[in-house]
Image 1 (spheres, rainbow, N blue to C red):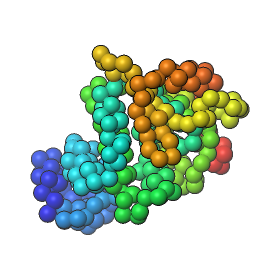
Image 2: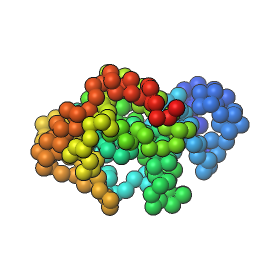
Image 3: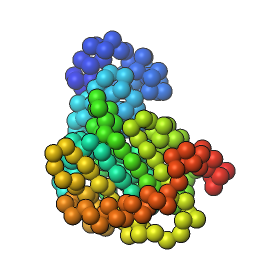
Image 4: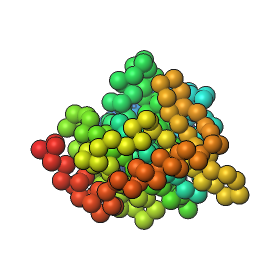
Length: 249
């Protein structure tokens, strides 16, 4: 049996029936989760972890530890220690803001095998929890090109945009959209993140086609950040754009 899950349920006073209600599944499905090798859907794993007050990786360590690329691990360590994160993304929703279904769709479009995708999705959700669910979460500022909001099937994008709207109202999270009418801008060269930490210099993370990389040369990133931030919509107008989502009607 999954003894960690069973003990966590007992300590939290939860049953298969109560977890099923919170996760939105049949009680028989929830009852099978304590069996060896039975992994809930990523969305249900997140719901169960919240209900039990545990981390996803604590309840199902195999789905987190086996998939995160070695080259990406140094950045996850930076994320967990950062006091602020500033992220620009021109083509997809940033990983820290993705729903499980959206993450699955994005990862399915790449070279990963089918049996690898679930582990990567779980690792991505664990990253989100490590950043947003800590006692004092960092200030996170996201600038997303409107093109990223328009890419994806409606059945995936409606819940994803709902999630963005909820996250954008958090006190420690600012979300700004660069509208299509802004035209060309330096950020089109690619996604990046700038992390600020206590008692150390800022660290940048840059994506490319092969792998991401960390850099201490963040001055060029700050110049691009200032530009894309200046052409992005204010917070309230960005939320209004998410709510209207006229391109999905």
